[in-house]
Length: 168
Image: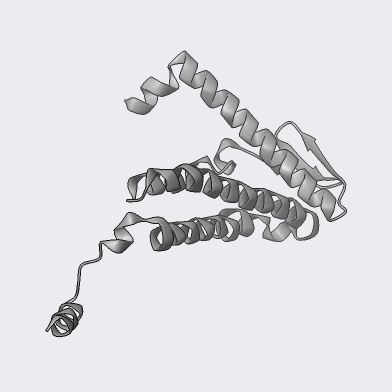
């Protein structure tokens, strides 16, 4: 109900469509620049990026990384930590996820050129898990270095006994 309400609210829908189009454009241009750096002639046609003389890669809405970004941001928001750290860590993490996604799309375009038989496995399994691995690393860094819960670990009986002996 909540999703349907937001999706069919005109203003929210316009923001959604504009942000989706901007993210698509950003990923296409970033992937094109990455492939250009390696000397490939690349063109974008609508939502498709392709190295010249290949079929290319079409960026559907599910390929934009929005769910992964939302998952990352939601975890950081829900996990304990200072707001001032969350205000910089979430955008930095989203930028990293976006860069990994650019590399993923550029990699898929390259695979379509030289190894088209491996495009499906890379798209559906290997690259997807690579992105999620980066997200887990970002979560780990958050928990280890920025979460306020890291200082609230329950004491074990051994550490309690050591403290009692030192106090005596």
